[in-house]
Length: 128
Image (cartoon, rainbow, N blue to C red; front, top):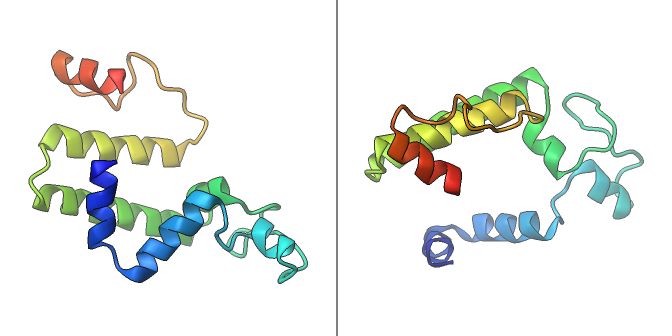
């Protein structure tokens, strides 16, 4: 909670509002827009998949969405490096996000590629 509070203090009002909507499940996904009676269908506007919901927003297979995600992961990685995050942690986060976004059904195991070459770091990550 301390990290969340610190991050929230640095966020713009728009980002704070977005986080609140995201956490509460009230973002403008197709599903929510149909419930609000502001759209007639819940299809994803990018890939036309039925029932756009929060998970779909993160994993949409549209090529433009996939490219945006990669750019955002790179931006996050660069930010982590700029605030002096340990390299193995920054790499863990970047690899983990890429792996999950490439295959949301990916099942993490003890030998998953996301883990580092360091046994000590692997044990710490696995325990989380």
